[in-house]
Image (cartoon, rainbow, N blue to C red; front, side):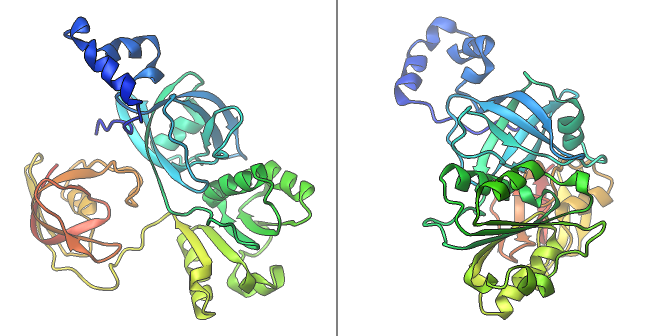
Length: 365
């Protein structure tokens, strides 16, 4: 899908000026000429230029990007959809921003971990080069630091789950607010630890920062049973958890069992499928462009229904984040597999990876 970047916030005076002189550039637009001079100057979409790529452990890199002059800023912990051109086609994926929201060098960064069977992460880790122009989508996410900041904080992460948390820690460092912070981070091998140097630096500089690094190749996986030993006062802390679904679920359950469910914030890398345990009605899924109709049982994502029917369906993250799998709902209603909510109207743009059919539906795919 040739999705465009987010619409930049352009000053009204600049918009009016470009509109006023557009007849001088016909049949092109003034923006088309600005784009030729500097692709970041376009007012059509938000773009960025890759400035540097640095290894982040043995399986990930940090890609630093200079955004266009209309970069709106982000909150620590949020993510962004990134559009990159691979073999003549734009591919979109969502990545947590790992930079401090107020970077001195003006660069934003994201840190993808390679998934060799994937398309975008191998490109970002092995092939992308400085100078590459990328598209930047909307900034999203509610896994952010509260305002005001809690007095005591506990961060629990594993693998690339550290990425939104590192932006939070960098922001706390920038604001000199690293007062009483405990972080437990797990990685499979020592050379796979992402941001190990940043964590160690914080540990060295702040007496109130306590780092517990676990290498699961040798240590056991960090579980709720070990929480009292590692952080005895965890009940007094605001917790932030980011990592694999099983780990996140176990800590969510633990906090809920202790009556502290409102003390934990979390980021998932996989959707919770099931819609509150309620099965859907299902129905026939008609993919109009492909001229294929397939039965859907009401519990299977439309994306998988199409794939099983032999249709080459567009997809990206498969967790409802990157917006690559979208299609236009032409008739019928859908059910969100994460919430169980039923809805949809003709013309709606829907994500096939997290929605299923609620009755017979037609989609423009």
